[in-house]
Image (cartoon, rainbow over all chains, first blue to last red; front, top):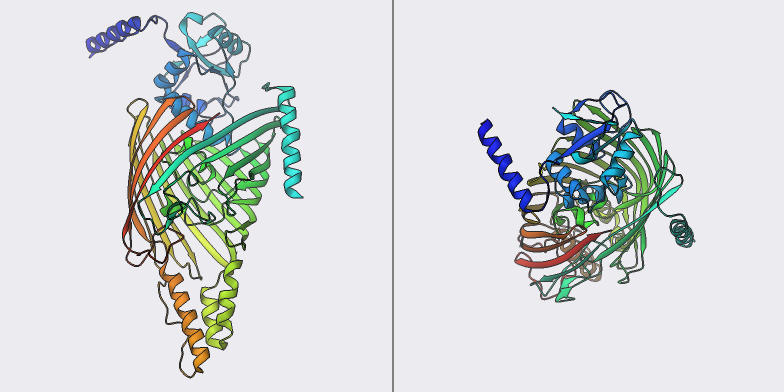
Length: 143
Length: 411
């Protein structure tokens, strides 16, 4: 099983190399190092980014931040963690925007800007390519 | 007066938007969004129309071979966060109206106040959540089909209301539950120049979300008047007690309507399935109507083929003996026979049909999707189904085929 998974990862790396991306830099979910949250489930991440969950499990408000639509890390985040494509996310927010029921998370245009926004707000949650990690951020483990 | 006020407000808001720009976290802030559909539909039944809704004067089939009017729509919206807890929206929609023009009309205009992050109160114009996708049925980008299945969505004539609504959301164990209560009313113009008015609209709707699953239930109650039919029923009333009884049984003059809808959606990402069952009842000629649909689709990357099965059935009277002609003088008897025939015509024309649709959605860019859909309508015996504007040459109870293509977009 382990061998098979390794093989799959190797293949994905090869394919992504061919596609011109660097495999080492995977998209991770981050919070500020001042935020006590260490792990979240995929369902919780999904609910936070779909606007259904407005507090962390410890009761603190959660402020999700998005990368801009043109960012490759954004597509990777939504397909890997939410299992949804960009048009599906667009359709989801269209339902809420055009009924006055919600507005999508604010966006930032780069990994640097994401690191900055999450680091300076203990309520924030974001995602970025691991290249942009620094010691002001904590990677949220997925359980 | 009201319309001028709304237009002036919209203009003022728009100036603010362009002047201030959209800056989150500063209040007040504004955002501008829009949606639309450019679509055409062809019906192979040339003696009746397939129209967009009960207020549309005509559509595809008899009036036009290929109609761009049935599905095309453009909507623009301004959303403003006045304070962190007070939000306003104004949405104006242009589509084929009852009077055949495209004058933009206000679909949404309300203020929402968040009493707590989970409890909010709003007031103004809003769309009632009668069915699962009622609120965003015109935002075709956000729904799987070219248009919501008429077997369910064609049941209720008045869509948006002016009123108040309370929304309460709570979470438990990964479930998110949203309960809403609404009170309001609305008058709408119809193609024959009369008004349809819904009063004392009271509704409860509940949405339970858990992972990929959504469960929806709603109950609405209102008093409906279709002013245009009153002269017809008044003619019955001239025949004394038996005429009064018939008019009271079948007229739509402040009568109570009730409807219940149950819906389920399961969308884990790669595929989806959704279905709804709806029931509407009233002591009118419209009677007891039940409809359902089930839709499923599979997403192959940007391309999503889908299929829908749907049915609508009338369970009330589809005919009546009407006025007894016994003992009436000849002239009155002829008049009564004419009224009986007209009433039976109305009762018999209840929308009853089954349909199967197959379609494909292609998300060719992020903000737009192309949809192509084929629908086969199988009309119940004696019924025109959902077709309207039937011509003398129309034969009820047959079948019809619809071919539709549309580009849906949001911005």
